Length: 336
Ligand SMILES: Cc1ncc(COP(=O)(O)O)c(C=O)c1O
Image (cartoon, rainbow, N blue to C red; front, side):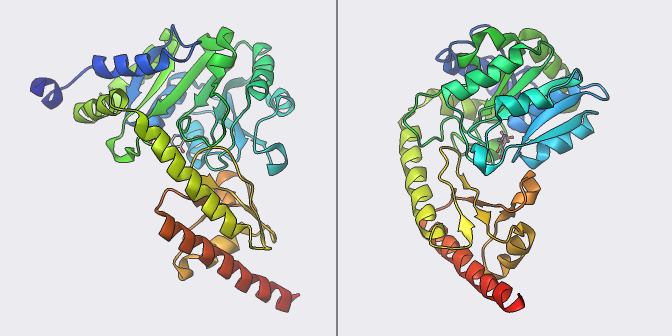
Protein backbone atom coordinates (compact mmCIF):
# COMPACT_ATOMS: atom_id res chain seq x y z
CA UNK A 1 0.00 0.00 0.00
CA UNK A 2 2.73 2.51 1.04
CA UNK A 3 4.66 1.84 -2.14
CA UNK A 4 1.59 2.54 -4.29
CA UNK A 5 0.91 5.81 -2.51
CA UNK A 6 4.55 6.96 -2.68
CA UNK A 7 5.31 5.89 -6.21
CA UNK A 8 3.69 6.26 -9.62
CA UNK A 9 0.38 4.46 -10.01
CA UNK A 10 -1.75 3.60 -13.08
CA UNK A 11 -2.51 6.64 -15.29
CA UNK A 12 -6.21 5.81 -15.62
CA UNK A 13 -6.69 5.60 -11.85
CA UNK A 14 -6.05 3.14 -9.01
CA UNK A 15 -7.88 -0.15 -9.66
CA UNK A 16 -9.72 0.17 -6.33
CA UNK A 17 -11.02 3.63 -7.25
CA UNK A 18 -12.10 2.53 -10.71
CA UNK A 19 -13.84 -0.43 -9.06
CA UNK A 20 -15.59 1.84 -6.55
CA UNK A 21 -16.72 4.18 -9.34
CA UNK A 22 -17.95 1.24 -11.39
CA UNK A 23 -19.73 -0.20 -8.39
CA UNK A 24 -21.52 3.13 -7.79
CA UNK A 25 -22.38 3.24 -11.52
CA UNK A 26 -23.77 -0.31 -11.46
CA UNK A 27 -26.84 1.24 -9.92
CA UNK A 28 -27.23 3.22 -13.16
CA UNK A 29 -28.53 0.96 -15.90
CA UNK A 30 -27.15 2.13 -19.22
CA UNK A 31 -23.55 2.33 -18.08
CA UNK A 32 -22.78 -1.38 -17.78
CA UNK A 33 -20.15 -1.31 -20.54
CA UNK A 34 -18.60 2.02 -19.60
CA UNK A 35 -14.95 2.26 -18.59
CA UNK A 36 -13.46 4.71 -16.11
CA UNK A 37 -10.80 7.41 -16.53
CA UNK A 38 -9.73 9.15 -13.32
CA UNK A 39 -8.37 12.70 -13.44
CA UNK A 40 -7.40 15.63 -11.21
CA UNK A 41 -11.02 16.63 -10.75
CA UNK A 42 -13.88 16.46 -13.20
CA UNK A 43 -12.37 19.53 -14.79
CA UNK A 44 -9.27 17.70 -15.99
CA UNK A 45 -11.30 14.80 -17.35
CA UNK A 46 -13.38 17.26 -19.39
CA UNK A 47 -10.28 19.07 -20.63
CA UNK A 48 -8.63 15.77 -21.57
CA UNK A 49 -11.75 14.67 -23.43
CA UNK A 50 -11.88 17.87 -25.49
CA UNK A 51 -8.14 17.80 -26.17
CA UNK A 52 -8.32 14.17 -27.25
CA UNK A 53 -11.19 14.64 -29.68
CA UNK A 54 -11.62 18.19 -30.96
CA UNK A 55 -10.32 19.09 -34.41
CA UNK A 56 -10.08 22.66 -35.65
CA UNK A 57 -13.54 23.88 -36.60
CA UNK A 58 -15.40 21.28 -34.54
CA UNK A 59 -18.34 22.79 -32.71
CA UNK A 60 -19.40 22.13 -29.13
CA UNK A 61 -22.93 23.06 -28.09
CA UNK A 62 -22.86 24.81 -24.73
CA UNK A 63 -26.23 25.65 -23.20
CA UNK A 64 -26.22 29.00 -21.36
CA UNK A 65 -26.09 29.67 -18.49
CA UNK A 66 -22.89 27.64 -18.57
CA UNK A 67 -19.84 27.10 -16.48
CA UNK A 68 -17.42 29.72 -17.73
CA UNK A 69 -14.43 27.39 -18.05
CA UNK A 70 -16.13 25.23 -20.70
CA UNK A 71 -15.87 27.81 -23.47
CA UNK A 72 -12.26 28.56 -22.51
CA UNK A 73 -11.37 24.85 -22.58
CA UNK A 74 -13.11 24.29 -25.91
CA UNK A 75 -11.22 27.17 -27.51
CA UNK A 76 -7.89 26.02 -26.02
CA UNK A 77 -8.50 22.60 -27.56
CA UNK A 78 -9.16 24.08 -31.00
CA UNK A 79 -12.95 23.85 -30.98
CA UNK A 80 -15.69 26.41 -31.29
CA UNK A 81 -18.23 26.86 -28.49
CA UNK A 82 -21.76 27.32 -29.84
CA UNK A 83 -23.69 28.95 -27.05
CA UNK A 84 -27.41 28.16 -26.93
CA UNK A 85 -29.47 30.48 -24.80
CA UNK A 86 -31.64 28.64 -22.25
CA UNK A 87 -33.43 31.47 -20.45
CA UNK A 88 -35.32 31.41 -17.16
CA UNK A 89 -38.56 31.00 -19.16
CA UNK A 90 -37.37 27.52 -20.23
CA UNK A 91 -36.27 26.77 -16.66
CA UNK A 92 -32.63 27.22 -17.82
CA UNK A 93 -32.93 23.86 -19.62
CA UNK A 94 -31.85 22.94 -23.12
CA UNK A 95 -35.01 22.26 -25.10
CA UNK A 96 -35.12 19.75 -27.98
CA UNK A 97 -36.06 22.60 -30.35
CA UNK A 98 -33.01 24.68 -29.36
CA UNK A 99 -30.75 21.62 -29.65
CA UNK A 100 -32.14 20.75 -33.08
CA UNK A 101 -31.55 24.27 -34.32
CA UNK A 102 -27.98 24.47 -33.01
CA UNK A 103 -26.78 21.06 -34.25
CA UNK A 104 -24.89 21.05 -37.56
CA UNK A 105 -22.61 18.67 -39.43
CA UNK A 106 -19.72 20.29 -37.54
CA UNK A 107 -21.09 19.51 -34.06
CA UNK A 108 -18.72 17.18 -32.21
CA UNK A 109 -20.02 17.47 -28.63
CA UNK A 110 -23.09 18.61 -26.73
CA UNK A 111 -22.57 19.60 -23.11
CA UNK A 112 -25.34 18.75 -20.66
CA UNK A 113 -25.02 19.73 -17.02
CA UNK A 114 -27.85 18.89 -14.68
CA UNK A 115 -28.24 19.80 -11.90
CA UNK A 116 -26.59 22.85 -13.39
CA UNK A 117 -24.01 25.34 -12.29
CA UNK A 118 -25.00 28.21 -12.04
CA UNK A 119 -28.74 27.65 -12.45
CA UNK A 120 -29.44 24.55 -10.32
CA UNK A 121 -31.78 23.36 -13.10
CA UNK A 122 -32.55 19.65 -13.47
CA UNK A 123 -34.21 17.67 -16.27
CA UNK A 124 -37.27 15.49 -15.85
CA UNK A 125 -37.17 12.02 -17.42
CA UNK A 126 -39.41 13.18 -20.27
CA UNK A 127 -37.36 16.30 -20.96
CA UNK A 128 -34.19 14.23 -21.22
CA UNK A 129 -35.96 11.68 -23.41
CA UNK A 130 -36.92 14.50 -25.80
CA UNK A 131 -33.29 15.69 -25.93
CA UNK A 132 -32.18 12.09 -26.57
CA UNK A 133 -34.59 11.88 -29.50
CA UNK A 134 -32.77 14.78 -31.20
CA UNK A 135 -29.37 13.21 -30.42
CA UNK A 136 -30.41 9.97 -32.15
CA UNK A 137 -30.61 11.91 -35.40
CA UNK A 138 -26.96 13.02 -35.07
CA UNK A 139 -24.89 9.85 -34.65
CA UNK A 140 -21.50 11.61 -34.78
CA UNK A 141 -22.23 13.81 -31.76
CA UNK A 142 -20.88 12.82 -28.34
CA UNK A 143 -22.52 14.03 -25.13
CA UNK A 144 -20.62 15.32 -22.15
CA UNK A 145 -23.04 14.69 -19.31
CA UNK A 146 -21.68 16.56 -16.32
CA UNK A 147 -23.59 15.06 -13.39
CA UNK A 148 -21.33 16.30 -10.63
CA UNK A 149 -24.31 17.67 -8.63
CA UNK A 150 -26.44 14.53 -9.11
CA UNK A 151 -26.54 13.87 -5.36
CA UNK A 152 -27.49 17.44 -4.45
CA UNK A 153 -31.16 17.62 -5.39
CA UNK A 154 -34.30 18.85 -3.67
CA UNK A 155 -37.06 17.22 -5.71
CA UNK A 156 -38.63 13.87 -4.94
CA UNK A 157 -38.17 12.52 -8.45
CA UNK A 158 -36.04 9.44 -8.89
CA UNK A 159 -32.77 10.51 -10.46
CA UNK A 160 -32.21 9.65 -14.09
CA UNK A 161 -29.20 10.75 -16.10
CA UNK A 162 -29.01 10.58 -19.89
CA UNK A 163 -27.50 7.07 -19.92
CA UNK A 164 -30.47 5.69 -17.98
CA UNK A 165 -33.05 7.51 -20.02
CA UNK A 166 -31.43 6.59 -23.35
CA UNK A 167 -29.23 3.49 -22.87
CA UNK A 168 -29.02 3.09 -26.66
CA UNK A 169 -26.84 6.23 -26.70
CA UNK A 170 -24.33 4.83 -24.21
CA UNK A 171 -21.55 4.58 -26.80
CA UNK A 172 -21.75 8.36 -27.18
CA UNK A 173 -22.00 9.48 -23.57
CA UNK A 174 -19.18 10.58 -21.30
CA UNK A 175 -20.62 10.84 -17.79
CA UNK A 176 -18.49 13.09 -15.61
CA UNK A 177 -18.57 13.07 -11.83
CA UNK A 178 -16.21 13.29 -8.87
CA UNK A 179 -15.90 13.81 -5.14
CA UNK A 180 -15.75 17.64 -5.17
CA UNK A 181 -19.44 18.35 -4.71
CA UNK A 182 -21.01 15.12 -3.42
CA UNK A 183 -18.48 14.76 -0.60
CA UNK A 184 -17.30 18.41 -0.38
CA UNK A 185 -13.76 17.26 -1.30
CA UNK A 186 -12.87 19.98 -3.79
CA UNK A 187 -9.22 20.21 -2.74
CA UNK A 188 -8.47 16.49 -3.13
CA UNK A 189 -8.74 16.83 -6.90
CA UNK A 190 -10.39 13.58 -7.86
CA UNK A 191 -12.90 13.29 -10.68
CA UNK A 192 -13.71 10.68 -13.29
CA UNK A 193 -15.34 10.05 -16.60
CA UNK A 194 -17.37 6.95 -17.44
CA UNK A 195 -17.56 6.31 -21.12
CA UNK A 196 -17.01 3.99 -24.07
CA UNK A 197 -13.60 2.24 -24.15
CA UNK A 198 -12.20 4.15 -27.17
CA UNK A 199 -12.94 7.54 -25.64
CA UNK A 200 -11.63 6.51 -22.22
CA UNK A 201 -8.40 5.29 -23.87
CA UNK A 202 -8.01 8.63 -25.65
CA UNK A 203 -8.60 10.57 -22.40
CA UNK A 204 -6.05 8.39 -20.62
CA UNK A 205 -3.52 8.96 -23.42
CA UNK A 206 -3.79 12.73 -22.86
CA UNK A 207 -3.52 12.24 -19.10
CA UNK A 208 -0.25 10.30 -19.56
CA UNK A 209 1.36 13.35 -21.16
CA UNK A 210 0.23 15.99 -18.72
CA UNK A 211 0.20 15.07 -15.04
CA UNK A 212 0.51 11.27 -15.30
CA UNK A 213 -1.94 10.50 -12.51
CA UNK A 214 -4.01 12.06 -9.73
CA UNK A 215 -2.19 11.79 -6.39
CA UNK A 216 -2.74 8.24 -5.15
CA UNK A 217 -3.41 9.42 -1.60
CA UNK A 218 -6.29 11.53 -2.95
CA UNK A 219 -7.62 8.56 -4.89
CA UNK A 220 -7.62 6.42 -1.74
CA UNK A 221 -9.52 9.21 0.06
CA UNK A 222 -12.05 9.11 -2.79
CA UNK A 223 -12.40 5.31 -2.36
CA UNK A 224 -13.07 5.87 1.35
CA UNK A 225 -15.75 8.45 0.49
CA UNK A 226 -17.42 6.20 -2.10
CA UNK A 227 -17.31 3.07 0.03
CA UNK A 228 -18.04 4.69 3.41
CA UNK A 229 -21.49 5.24 4.92
CA UNK A 230 -23.65 7.14 2.43
CA UNK A 231 -26.23 8.37 4.96
CA UNK A 232 -24.30 11.62 5.08
CA UNK A 233 -25.55 12.46 1.58
CA UNK A 234 -29.19 12.63 2.67
CA UNK A 235 -28.20 14.63 5.76
CA UNK A 236 -26.28 17.15 3.69
CA UNK A 237 -29.09 17.34 1.16
CA UNK A 238 -31.50 18.26 3.95
CA UNK A 239 -29.09 20.95 5.21
CA UNK A 240 -28.71 22.45 1.72
CA UNK A 241 -32.47 22.33 1.23
CA UNK A 242 -33.02 24.35 4.43
CA UNK A 243 -30.38 26.84 3.37
CA UNK A 244 -31.89 27.22 -0.08
CA UNK A 245 -35.32 27.93 1.37
CA UNK A 246 -33.92 30.38 3.96
CA UNK A 247 -32.04 32.27 1.22
CA UNK A 248 -35.11 32.26 -1.04
CA UNK A 249 -37.33 33.67 1.72
CA UNK A 250 -35.01 36.67 2.14
CA UNK A 251 -34.24 37.30 -1.54
CA UNK A 252 -37.92 37.16 -2.50
CA UNK A 253 -38.56 40.17 -0.25
CA UNK A 254 -36.67 42.28 -2.74
CA UNK A 255 -38.76 43.96 -5.45
CA UNK A 256 -35.56 44.13 -7.51
CA UNK A 257 -35.01 40.38 -7.81
CA UNK A 258 -36.88 37.55 -9.45
CA UNK A 259 -35.62 34.37 -7.79
CA UNK A 260 -36.70 30.94 -9.01
CA UNK A 261 -36.48 27.91 -6.73
CA UNK A 262 -34.52 25.33 -8.69
CA UNK A 263 -34.09 21.72 -7.83
CA UNK A 264 -30.40 21.04 -7.53
CA UNK A 265 -26.80 22.15 -6.82
CA UNK A 266 -26.17 24.87 -4.23
CA UNK A 267 -26.74 28.06 -6.17
CA UNK A 268 -29.51 30.58 -6.66
CA UNK A 269 -29.58 32.53 -9.88
CA UNK A 270 -31.94 35.50 -9.47
CA UNK A 271 -32.61 38.03 -12.19
CA UNK A 272 -32.08 41.67 -11.32
CA UNK A 273 -34.79 44.11 -12.46
CA UNK A 274 -32.40 46.55 -14.17
CA UNK A 275 -30.56 43.72 -15.94
CA UNK A 276 -27.23 45.34 -15.06
CA UNK A 277 -25.63 42.38 -13.29
CA UNK A 278 -22.11 43.83 -13.57
CA UNK A 279 -23.04 47.04 -11.71
CA UNK A 280 -24.83 45.08 -8.99
CA UNK A 281 -22.02 42.55 -8.56
CA UNK A 282 -19.56 45.47 -8.37
CA UNK A 283 -21.55 47.24 -5.68
CA UNK A 284 -21.80 44.25 -3.33
CA UNK A 285 -18.20 43.56 -2.18
CA UNK A 286 -18.01 46.93 -0.43
CA UNK A 287 -20.91 45.75 1.74
CA UNK A 288 -19.01 42.52 2.49
CA UNK A 289 -20.81 40.21 0.10
CA UNK A 290 -19.63 38.59 -3.13
CA UNK A 291 -21.75 37.29 -5.99
CA UNK A 292 -20.80 36.33 -9.54
CA UNK A 293 -22.51 38.30 -12.33
CA UNK A 294 -24.59 36.22 -14.72
CA UNK A 295 -22.58 37.66 -17.63
CA UNK A 296 -19.74 35.36 -16.56
CA UNK A 297 -22.07 32.43 -17.30
CA UNK A 298 -23.47 33.78 -20.55
CA UNK A 299 -26.64 34.98 -18.81
CA UNK A 300 -26.48 38.76 -18.31
CA UNK A 301 -29.00 40.23 -15.88
CA UNK A 302 -28.60 37.44 -13.34
CA UNK A 303 -26.48 37.04 -10.21
CA UNK A 304 -25.15 33.74 -8.91
CA UNK A 305 -25.32 33.23 -5.16
CA UNK A 306 -23.88 30.15 -3.50
CA UNK A 307 -25.49 28.64 -0.42
CA UNK A 308 -22.53 26.36 0.33
CA UNK A 309 -21.91 28.20 3.60
CA UNK A 310 -23.39 28.16 7.09
CA UNK A 311 -26.90 29.50 7.51
CA UNK A 312 -25.96 32.53 9.67
CA UNK A 313 -23.45 33.79 7.08
CA UNK A 314 -25.88 32.96 4.29
CA UNK A 315 -28.82 34.85 5.79
CA UNK A 316 -26.62 37.86 6.60
CA UNK A 317 -25.29 37.81 3.02
CA UNK A 318 -28.78 37.63 1.51
CA UNK A 319 -29.98 40.51 3.68
CA UNK A 320 -26.96 42.52 2.50
CA UNK A 321 -27.85 41.79 -1.13
CA UNK A 322 -31.44 42.95 -0.55
CA UNK A 323 -30.31 46.12 1.28
CA UNK A 324 -27.70 47.04 -1.32
CA UNK A 325 -30.23 46.54 -4.13
CA UNK A 326 -32.71 48.78 -2.29
CA UNK A 327 -30.00 51.46 -2.15
CA UNK A 328 -29.23 51.07 -5.86
CA UNK A 329 -32.98 51.13 -6.62
CA UNK A 330 -33.28 54.53 -4.89
CA UNK A 331 -30.33 55.85 -6.92
CA UNK A 332 -31.96 54.63 -10.17
CA UNK A 333 -35.21 56.41 -9.30
CA UNK A 334 -33.35 59.68 -8.50
CA UNK A 335 -31.43 59.41 -11.78
CA UNK A 336 -34.51 58.83 -13.94
C1 LIG B 1 -20.75 21.77 -13.24
C2 LIG B 1 -19.36 21.57 -12.75
N1 LIG B 1 -18.58 20.63 -13.33
C3 LIG B 1 -17.32 20.41 -12.92
C4 LIG B 1 -16.77 21.15 -11.88
C5 LIG B 1 -15.35 20.88 -11.50
O1 LIG B 1 -15.27 19.86 -10.58
P1 LIG B 1 -13.85 19.33 -10.05
O2 LIG B 1 -13.59 20.04 -8.76
O3 LIG B 1 -14.08 17.87 -9.84
O4 LIG B 1 -12.83 19.63 -11.07
C6 LIG B 1 -17.54 22.14 -11.25
C7 LIG B 1 -16.96 22.96 -10.17
O5 LIG B 1 -17.46 23.99 -9.79
C8 LIG B 1 -18.86 22.35 -11.68
O6 LIG B 1 -19.63 23.27 -11.12
